[in-house]
Image (cartoon, rainbow, N blue to C red; front, side, top):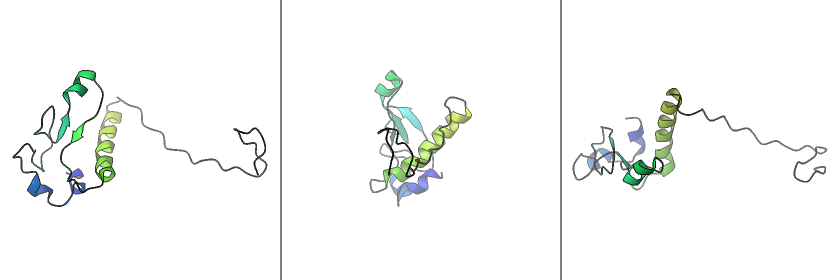
Length: 110
């Protein structure tokens, strides 16, 4: 339910469970299921790779705000199940001092 708060105003009025929508307060998924919250295209199931369609967000929301909690939830669950390795934290870029050898040029940086 935490994810739903990112899906835009009026989500409870739009996602009623009628007209090929899942109710806003229930999660479901399915292959080629247009009534599910998250739809998995048949070709994705066949190939074992591809994409999913989250059918709940309103058209006027920021897709990055909506996608982040979903990806975090899925990746956390996969890590707990031992199906993926945790992603290491990104390292800060190195800063070059005045007399350090730059790896691309082989010369001194200034």
